[in-house]
Amino acid sequence: MLTADALASLLIKKRIRVTTAESATAGMIASCLADTPGMSDCMKEAYVTYSNEAKEKILGVKEETISEHTVYSHEVAAEMAEGARRVSGADLALSVTGIAGPGGGTSSQPVGLVYIGASYRDTTVTRKYIFSGDRNKVRRKACIEACRLGITLIIK
Image (cartoon, rainbow, N blue to C red):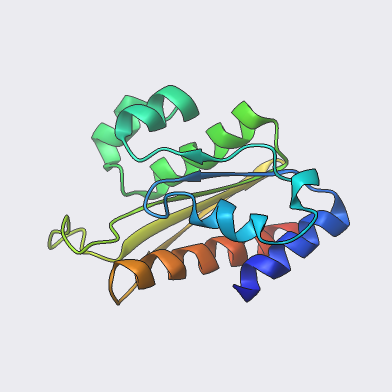
């Protein structure tokens, strides 16, 4: 995946430590980054926090945030990224929460809805996407956009 390669190369070149907090992508971002030789110098940990309980226990996402905004929200994506960065000690954390499908969608939160978060140093940003395609396409697109967001934050 070219975007993951580009992010991995940038991380290695700039000696930036990275972690991921993934739900819908279930470790895909970490796996794509790890395909690049030399990533072991930059990536020490990655979290797959599929359940709300794992998001709360491992990453410190507040139960109130999930209750108030739902697990598929800017707020949860931000807390996932910030929590992963804090827990791991990384410089950059990427997070993904969403509905990859084929089930689980509603009229207000359709299949393909994905929130991506990135926390780098003192900045946290989130993006909302509604991707089309089957489960694997949604997950791949989320991985690409997460890596793209990481690159954007680093080169700012």
